[in-house]
Length: 412
Image (cartoon, rainbow, N blue to C red):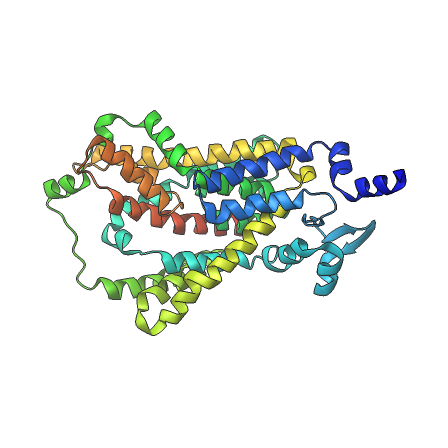
């Protein structure tokens, strides 16, 4: 009878949890992210799958965690070293489990991030940016956090490739962060993805925090519509639809010529947007890109990225450095956009609300909505959403180009 009870006990996960109590920390992290995604509604479409991926990956014996390969592709499978890239797909599924199959087939190959970018393009209206092109420059200024943290991370002992993957969190773009990390530092994919999406989810908290530190009430009360009236300059685009169709084609061509490594992201982003702007003739393609394909990609991406977050991979000093560095990159990107607006205002009669600089992140459209809510608190007539979207959308393009530059220079 004792043997029966012992076998039943060993069949459960309790013995493993007692032997490795650090697993409980991972459960706590999963529950925290589930709370933020479900209760607080912070990026639930990605935070919930990632959190659930963490949860199922850390149940001993469930074989749902992702086994990271080394630089040469070698993984330890039941005590035997094998090259994962030489294994047939059915062997990966059978010997390494479901999450490893999804991870190596869809994530590690770099397949899903561009697919998600296609969906983002299909859901994004570039109109606000095209109507306010002069404001799009603040999307470039907001990339400050990427390169500043890259330098800081190298000083603190990260390799250049690891530092670039850490810095790209400052672009506030999850797919871009994942794509860059896959190319440069795949062993850091789990913590970087968690940091990137967690901080994206906390945009409603981080932007107001940085804005309060750097902006005055007078600056936040700048009414963009009144400034346009004072300057007497209001840009009218007669054939906006034609411009919207031409724009993604031109951007893809220019980026492909100067930063070819950014084409997987920019190309798919612009393709999705082109399908959207063409109209009825491509409505079926638009529906697939914006709904079924993107939703499936989001589920697989979230679950498999979360499954990389095992206790062994996450609970170390390097991960703590990534979490701290990611927050710094995020905050510096917001600060860079704000400070650039302040600098422009010193030399311009037509003043610009610093909130437009604060939205130079890729967290579109959440960042713009948060900025608009802040502006309305100071002036109930001051709707800055369309102006913020100009820098917000350019930030998406800017972060993808920055990722391409880093991949090119660091040989990913």
